[in-house]
Length: 167
Image (cartoon, rainbow, N blue to C red; front, side):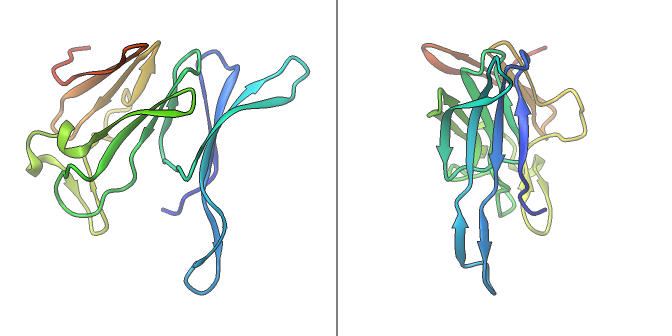
């Protein structure tokens, strides 16, 4: 699937993230006209939008905002290969537009044989459960292909992970 532009709205409805794909042209798409970015926008009283911050050179097919738009969670790119790796980004956590922490697929999956492998990439997420991923307050939950729900707490002290979370 080719990257596409979309928005992700926070629970308050006052902020949204614009996720903008790269734009390229040429026979091999080698001429870059625009690099990808994610921008946090806030609705103003007059109906206009104000950009609060921007993450340059970033694109994700899944972006989630906390209710206060302080934190943004981006699901990593499609990872090539057939097993989790420390080099493959699974999740990125941003606070006010600055990267706080990334988790690799190897950090989230204990059994490499449990990932879903296709011709082009592998997936560590269980996409069959419509409840996940989800964000409530400053808690982000995602279900893995191992059937486990992993929870991430976001606070002033950083990002905490609970791989044995029971919702």
